[in-house]
Image (cartoon, rainbow, N blue to C red; front, side, top):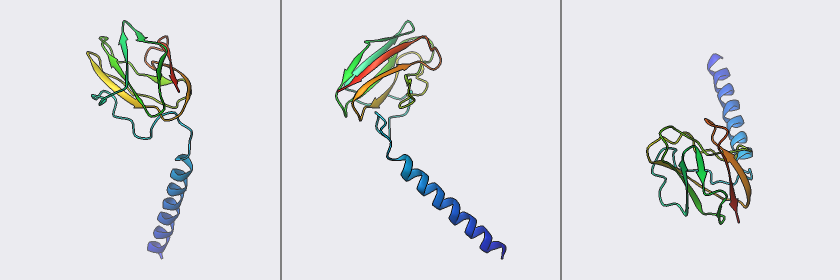
Amino acid sequence: MRLRSLKTALAGVSFFALAFSVACGSSSSPVSSTPPPAGGGGGSANSTVSIVNFSFSPTPVTVAVGQSIAWANSDSVAHTATADNGSFNTGAISPGGSSAAITMSSAGSFTYHCQIHPEMVATVNVQ
């Protein structure tokens, strides 16, 4: 009897997890669902935003839908590039030349900031 209850509970949890992942998979996020890991090389980006002296440059940066942006951190402290609406986040980009890239998958104008230093703000335009 106890084994049957456990199986029923596991089946319910599995169904809920599947339903949740399907529902969440249809969002209109401006980024691909699998951005490169933060702090990594970021691969080959179509545009690069430099992080120097606690600022993003250029701003705005403009890319086409499907293109990627790499944020390269040349400061001596970590930074993030985090959309104000929560639709993308590079995670912490280590200091000293590390970078992180995001592929933009829908058009729009997206303001972003550094979560660690909220006074750092900029804009991404996706056409």
